[in-house]
Amino acid sequence: MTTLAAPLLQPLARPETTSPWLALDARCRTALKHEIDAWPKPGLVTPVDSGSHRDMNYATFVDSIAALEGYFAQIAKAGARDADYADLQVIAIAAEARMLEATRGANTHRGAIFNLGLLAAADGLQRTTKRFKGRTSGEIVAARWGAAILGSRGAAPASHGEAVWQRYGVGGAREEAAAGFPDVYEIGLPALRHLLALGVDEEQALVGTLMALMAELPDTNLLWRGGEAGLRDVQQAASAFNSAGGVLQCDWRERLLAIHRWMVARNLSPGGSADLVAATWLAHQLDRDSQ
Image 1 (cartoon, rainbow, N blue to C red):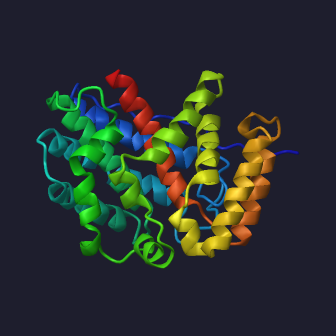
Image 2 (image 1 turned 135 degrees about the horizontal axis):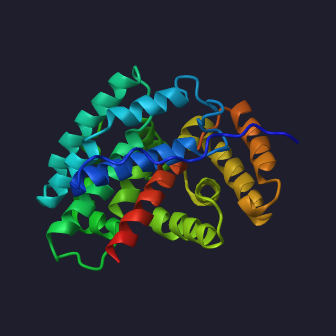
């Protein structure tokens, strides 16, 4: 069976500076670029098609990433100053406004602004204090800002994640971050590092990471779009794919394209898992550097 080939993953151009803040900013945006470039990803936007999304496409994501330039450096510097969570929120809200302007209102990276922004802030804090020596970026987020993240729920604007939390009692991104990103460190990173250790290329490893997360994560985007049945069905499909060999199968792309078509027909998209793929790639880079 002949399939379309998506572009190979390419990092963003390195900044012409030795500033660690700008280098971190580029690394965060590269995480987002790698996530959107990876193909195939069931239900999600890729360079090949828009998946289950009618309000955005690949170009929308590229514009969104460009609009976020400078945000991760700014929030990392705030983290280095040991800023409170409320101060980090101000920076993130401004970045979200730039994203929405660039995408004409499409929510391409709200979750990534939150997740990767906190990881960048943690990396900034780790650079300026020995208080968190030996801890992962996720552990620093939980220790320094976890309580404030949970405490801010009542003041949060209405969102799909909040609606899902009220209806199904599933925490979503807020609880994930406050707990130190356990799904990143216990599911995403082991999957990514295992595949990379086997010599799998980065794109294939990121898709494998996505499928590992899809099989386990109570993805609030799936709950919003398909309810408990939609979440259960996608988790079962991902689990079956992984049990059969995952991205190590010779026909893994064809198998994922079949899942993709099935999810698009049901308007299902694992957006929460996709956000954590980017967070996993970034955590892999940051924590490897800190060792």
